[in-house]
Length: 406
Image 1: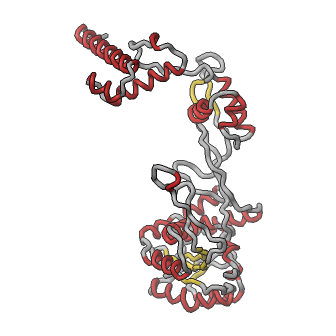
Image 2 (image 1 turned 30 degrees about the horizontal axis):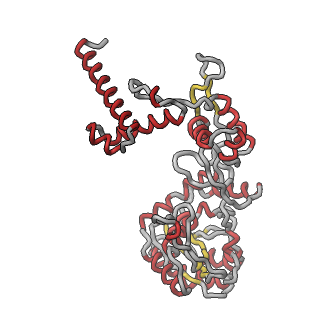
Image 3 (image 1 turned 90 degrees about the vertical axis):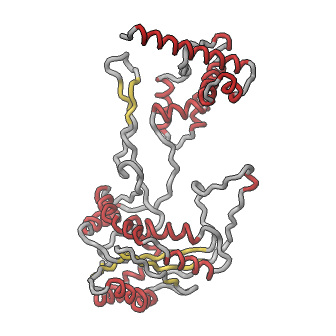
């Protein structure tokens, strides 16, 4: 219970709020701006702005201006169309075809697009995600991938390697790359050449943060086992010996044809302290190689921030980016290999993508509504998000690192 003094104070406060609301309504009807109303009545501009939204919503919902009650500060009116039936109908449509657009659902149910989006977000608790392209993996590939990932859990790799093709065109992320301007005609057009020049690069990193200067294969050179073995002998091994010093190290390479050739495997067995043979590295596993899931993306973001007019300009940019790589970032990327191996084992070989805030390979389950057992039958009291399956198989495969003509 409130004391008499507190009750008087509360009544005075409520009276003051009613007077302020009445003053704002008079200003709205007189056509005054929010700034004018706030200045004249000594009311915060944000309060006027928010109350105008409430007032306009009341009028848009069919209310008459003279019927607006200034004594009621909160008047969040729920549309008559927003009931359990419409929520269930939208849920059924989505369950039948999750690819339907929300505009299409709104047209089918003869409701507003805003209402559909509100129900999907607040009641069903779904979010709209873009489709992803992926590489098909057979059941046998998934099984081998899971088995080999499990075998590597307790092994530490010292040096990771991979190849990548860079081209001279500017790299554009259609979702993240934006241009701030007043008119869309001011947005520059990113040109793409019909046959862009490309360079193939071999990258090697260590779990201590060392980054080998990128080796660029000669243009038109077919990277077969002979060419690859020559690079291992004259470039890769001398660099690794220098970086590792006296400590033993382990060499990793994927299952590209040039890597799994018998003479390459025999040479690695005879000349490296330790290395993972062709039966060790999981197939189709760019998500386990730090060059694939970290280094190449960071490098391409910087090297292809703008287009290159010549191939040499592209090579110079790649060399500069590799020389300035942050050691700590490389170490962190290599340290994430074990957790990714665990993800592959848990997912039984299915490929995955790291998402923020949650598991990456949850069993598929639709969002369910929890009924209020104490309320009327069918009353919706709470929505629980039980998680959705988010899986992806990467487009790029180990086979792409095989013999190529540049």
